[in-house]
Length: 500
Image (cartoon, rainbow, N blue to C red; front, side, top):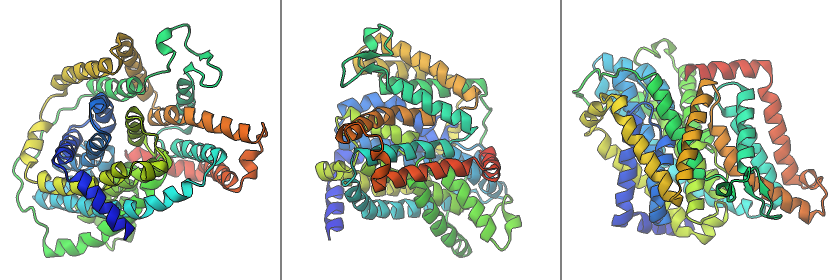
């Protein structure tokens, strides 16, 4: 009964005209940036962070969440119509979705993607409502040692799940930890790594790093390899799946939802990993695996359900533990901190309207996407045709205005430019910057929890291994790192990420 009462509270918050408007803005923007290859939810959320300063916390997070799961919908549209995925998680959808479109079944492919995403999103929302409070109750029993070990496990998992070489991912983690140390030490009030610049006394601004690395960095990379985009079709007919289609897609949707929900919770997991895993699973279970890659509708249904479920369940560790599972969740943590809210288990008890309002908005947002997506296909097709060199000047102007408005500081604008160049270099070196952002967010918290643990234990570092939960978490981190170093797993991981 408590869950129903809480969900009713959430609906009363998310159902206000004010929050419905921002939910609609979020899912519409999410779909639009999912449609435009190169503009992902990470870059968009990073650019919109300054706007959230003037919004209530509930409205800000509802809009940002809508952008994230809305992008999963939008990415499938270009994957099916143009064979050019707007999102990494839609790479798999293009394999069979585009073949269906070439065979005259674009409408069935698009409706299958929308229906699969809606079903997965609805189930994932229920899972968040059921399991998040229970996980938060467990997390409330954690002490400083357990939180430190949990964050170590999260960073190790982000290394494992990051695309590219493991050494590059480890390097990104170290860079993020170093960036998190810039500023005045909380305990000793001694400046660290400020190089005498007073602008760095309070540390590096999260918005500056996010908008530089993911905003400007993406822009520079996209300008370098701008692709000519032309939609295969502008008219889509036969939107409703047939009775035979329903028989073929229902089981893959449910399996994809289950797999995506599990992988979304894992640090470093999320939508992209879930879609690849679902496609491999459906191909293995299929009686006719040779059809995959030639227009199998199961190859659209499973991955689309998986990526949407993975996108939404990734909110569970962020909301309950304060542990971001991917770059988007790190930005969401940053948005909460900007609003003066400390992510973690206390959010559910101290901010019930925020927590349950966000959950309820996810179901409302998925319903909006189902209603909006198919009728607006013509608009999305026109957006695909916009040359990127017309878009990037506008994006840069908004980035500069947004960063300057945070602290009214021109220093932050220069900082964004520096991190933009750094983000481009990272991509050229095949070093995914997402682990760096996770480490930048978690680093200061890890340092604080480690200090508290040592303070309570009177300087004894063995407290990290003598407390059972902390020891188990560290052992899991060690096992995870050891497993990924095995030659067979390293080869399998390399093949999996080559598809992306």
